[in-house]
Image (cartoon, rainbow, N blue to C red):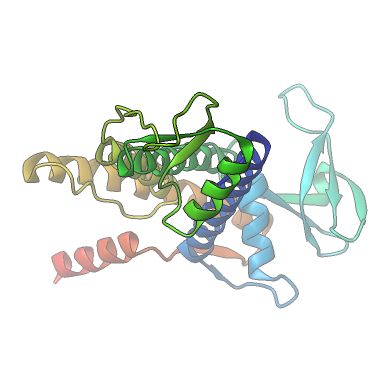
Length: 279
């Protein structure tokens, strides 16, 4: 239990940072396993390729050095397209190439990375997590304890830390009558965890759809649930298809053997269902 606003703020910031990092690792792992890279060159690490595509939405292939590097467009022509590209290596290597000297492999037509959208959703999910913790804390102990001075506050904080976190909130009140019982006040908190968890699940589903992973809303009645699941799965299929089709098209135009192939359970189930229909 924090005994000062500064310490409480530090604890909250640390919790928020840990939660953001946990969700970021989770969604990155899902994306990395959502596709299989066929004909991957030996010198090109799969994790590096997918990390670059996830964060930047494209990767440049330099025809002179045969390196796959993060790239940025330079200049603009009459059609609004870059007239050149800068390719940057993690070791400080910087290459400036004309358009015909580099091939750009994208995961969508706007060459937009997945990370910005996922980060926005992670912030929402973390807000729900923190609010759920606060609501649980509020309804877990519906009283606020008052103490007469700072020394008593510190003593009570030590006692509270030995119990479940957030059991009691204590503050200094010099007029409190400690000769009898510790004064208490009801917080009036309402139980909102169920609604918060449902909203949180919906935000997570949005991310899973964006990454092309199957989702299911189990809180709805069967008829409504079936319609919503079919719609969400259709969106998930479209999202992963955009990534794969765009990347493979660019690779084919560039004359590269590199290809992406779906590896999600949703796409495997659909492929199995299509084979059963053909039999």
